[in-house]
Image 1 (cartoon, rainbow, N blue to C red):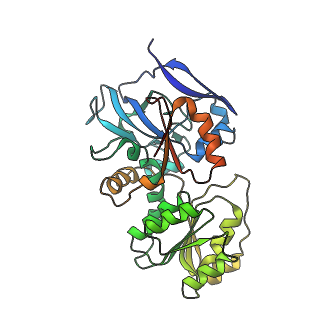
Image 2 (cartoon, rainbow, N blue to C red; image 1 turned 30 degrees about the horizontal axis):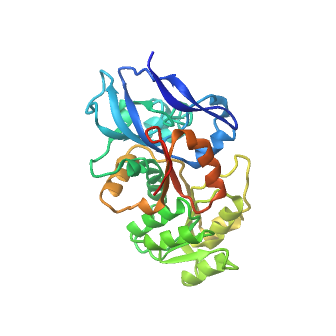
Image 3 (cartoon, helix red, strand yellow; image 1 turned 60 degrees about the vertical axis):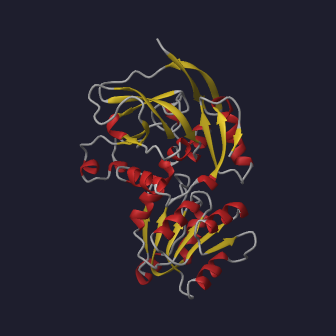
Length: 351
């Protein structure tokens, strides 16, 4: 049996890089040789046992690019050597939600690298219908960034901000991309609130009109209201995942405004909001949890066309053996943004 190198999360807090069998594909699947996988906050949650603990031991990793190594007999439009990524979200296809086009809500919903073995390995298998070809002009690093961009696109579609509307984004992680998406939708002003000077500068360079550093601003809510004509923002995006910042985002909205819920809190966390404001203020909330379906090719298009240039967000490339080190380093160094893991390199490389 052929084997490959993989980073196996054996139990919470334990990662072992070892040889495991190369995945066997069915007629409806393809085998992909992994080039790069971006480290996601979800991987940290799996490592700590906060998420998908019942699936361990498992090979995580889902923000990836690679090359098709083998094609199942029923696969169409794909061939060995194609440069690809994949939509990691899989519904059953037949339930109420899937028929409604809401497969993220499927009772049988699974995600590659989160519920099934993923891409912190030399090879991964995926259903051929989930695989998307990457243009030659797109680097493998950018190809491994398609998944997070697709998540931001999904949120933007749900929020559906109108042209010339004001948008405030709380958070300067993926919040930087949310701000860029608002700029692309011709929103104005676009405001980013965060606590990291380097990331806030990147947001400004990507087109944000104003940045608010909470380390230097006593009352960011008041500042947002000031920058939006004394009304508050038309749209507020929470991209941190804390109840305190959700409450803050709600307070930054004008009457009739919309809150986009993106940051993931703890399952039992609650926030304080007065129903009075929903009624008399006619405020609204949209939620989104992942990019799916058309969000993936849309992300590829925006990246390939240069509408989104993510390279300033790329921090480092590391070998598979350094994955556990990188998970901890991302928590210690706030200036690190996206770290890519590759089974093909032997030393760290600063980008």
